[in-house]
Image: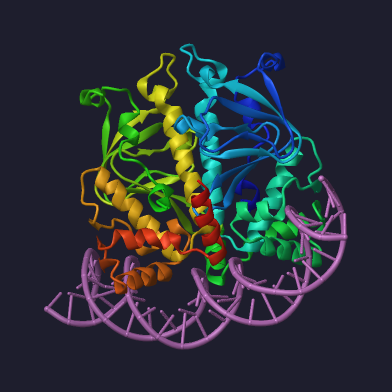
Length: 243
Length: 243
DNA sequence: CGTATGGTTGACGATAATCAAACGTCGTGG
DNA sequence: CCACGACGTTTGATTATCGTCAACCATACG
């Protein structure tokens, strides 16, 4: 039912709450920061992994190179989200991070994760990684069994949810990414993204003007996920009744 | 070029090598084991996460429930692979693990990961999780940009690779999973899996008899990943030339 | 200006989903 | 023993979704 919101879900508190209970805000004051301008690369796939990052402000995309010389977007990161976690698998970053607007990150030198004494970051790494893992798993499910319309609706609802959790409007927001990046992330072509936006607009589900979005009918967007093949819908209904 | 093999890749040494360099085999003797019969559930999505597991022998699948009352296969685990890592995100398992044949697992009680002193498992958790994360990311890429034939070829080559790393034949093996499970994992329907097998058979790439597979032409299977739209292929070629 | 980039729209086609039927193998119970 | 149903698999016919190709517009920028 709320698969849309759950499908991605980089919960707003993810990065913050995991670092220990009382979490004095000053604890971060010592951590170095770095400004990253729009379009600038924070780290490159294959680079030596020297640090982890936490987005302080702004937006990032992470991408991986595909065999066909293209780039595949693997995620969008907002304030509070971690960047570079996949670099812990080896000593190299497994993806590239690019700022989609002028942004700022907190830098956690990689040595922090190797100290003998348990730093707060080190202690919470498994949680952070596991969360990330669950999200990627849900993305895989989305890519496996949703149609284009459902993918786009998932994307918008998820973005809305994450922005809301950060204190922004849940209904009006500005897309920081291009149609091509959205399509790459969702596994559909740019034309399909464009057409889907247009069609949703036509049906009154939202208003689109370039990159500014206004969600007009959240319920209708959610109900797109009920539109399943008949047999599946019947099965789902029975399932709910039995529960 | 070898995207097929890389696309998944639960490297054979993953679970084993990560636990410390010399790795005396006896170190595991103390860890409790558990037999899991074919079809039996090791843990259920939503269950309290009390332990992590490492496959000692046999095969598992992990699945998540989809909104349409179906189940989506999120991975296949062979000997040496970890199970239950996604449970570290919360205190509940994010997926269900089912044995695809009579199997045995090593059980790591969850308390091990919470001890103050760093246990070997605890120390290697970030690596294990990050590896898993990278694999899921690659699965997402596969689901985003490969056609049915490439997905099936990826699956077979990956399985071949993993079996080989475990001392089995890389060319002849027995599928432990149904066509439906393969299709679910790859994001295609069961009929498509079947037809793709048939077509590959017809072209002499492999022999299929029920669930026994014989890979006849690994090169041809790999070359399926060069079959890209013309423009992409040209771009890829140029890229290689410039590198 | 000219060019590059991002976005929209239309026409067309290919890939894979859907629907349907058939077959073999199991295990179960009559 | 055989009949029966539940599965798993294969194959064919048809459909629909989405990708491809192409044209066009708007904006930014040197």
